[in-house]
Image (tube, rainbow, N blue to C red; front, side, top):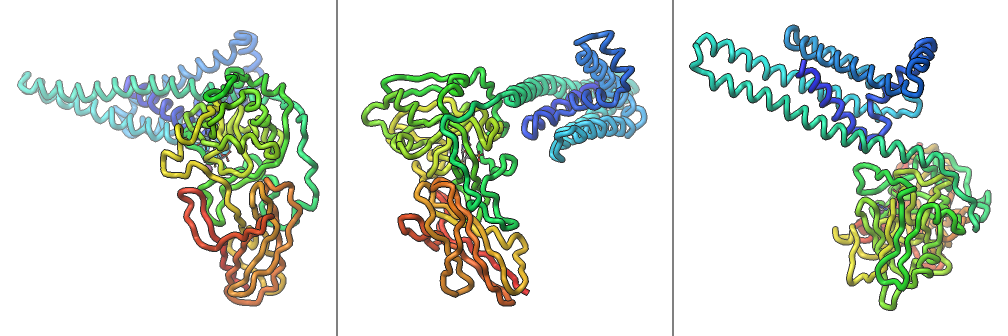
Length: 511
Ligand SMILES: Nc1nc2c(c(=O)[nH]1)N[C@H]1C(S)=C(S)[C@@H](COP(=O)(O)O)O[C@H]1N2
Ligand SMILES: [Mo]
């Protein structure tokens, strides 16, 4: 019975641990509770509520825990006397947990992972521990036949069994409770986030002209939806930051240190603006780029209040998770550049994985030197004195965004019918603006593409080229020219240390 209980506890702990990485809602135990609530007949629900009032959920969880414990103990006994029926019983219980998680309204297929990991883990432990229990009892029988001669053999097999059981049980309790508390904290922050009503911007984003979006199927939408916005960070688990506890501190080489709460930040006059965010690790033609409408407070205003001292040339922003970014101070102070302490993304509070409650967004710099998520400190300092997370790992201390362009259409598969073929994509020359985009077919001359209207120089711009395609295998390339006349170079440069260069080139089969 103890083996069954321990195996089940370890399985639950593994599931909680996996849920930390997958999603806090993917923890199976509470999902089973929710499924039972959904399935329970109205009469039963009413009776339970009448009996226990607001303690009804606690009652349900206790009932579930007792039931699970009974099943687990039963599985231990079964595995000993009639293998593999104990394993089968655990598999059935685990399958029910998996079903409960994956049938939640918001569930994705990935949510099954914690339950499956927990189920397989508990089955493995059950078989392992029962195996050791058998070894011990077999040894005991043999030893008693030979009257105590091999008593030490009994001790060894007994110790092996007890250590496995005790060690597993202790680890399951510590890890399980720790992970459960962390998952509960994430869920609590999710609930707080849902309840936030963002203030209206004092400076709203200018109306986006309809001519900024080309009507081409397969072309990246002008504004990237939050769900499909790329995500890059070093956090194994999305930090759960409670806005009520969040503080931003402006420290270091300043005349006036500043401390700001989330409510104070929301009460400031906020700016709304579209900014394209790019990752320095984006390969030529890559997907680590997105464009969103951000709501936030201009960092230059905060810096003006803090009054940086002479000699300072960098702001080292720091996240709750220890990540740091080095941003040139003068860029953050520019009057005509909206570097934001952002609280909103496309009309909602920042999604947890994009930095809730507050992050930085700086037009013209790659994310690793500017876009600190879950930001809690702006430390005014110098490039000489301090260095940031990725700089310490071989990347450049400064990361201005390089001019670039990408072909989105023709889409994957890259096949087209001979005749008129629409070629389209996006281009960026952040904070300078894109003047033109050209397309080249095979070894032909560069042909101008048609540009959509730009939202601003801080966002990408869509382009389209109508190609009169002849049958055969073709190669298409794209290049952009910025507002100052600089043309995107075709020389291939890898992403390390400060961003890839080269023309995005695709092969298309025309039939
Ligand atoms: N706290 C924290 N902030 C971070 C990072 C990180 O690892 N930790 N990664 C940066 C990098 S490299 C990029 S490209 C952007 C990506 O932002 P996104 O995930 O919202 O797209 O966040 C930046 N901010
Ligand atoms: Mo990045």
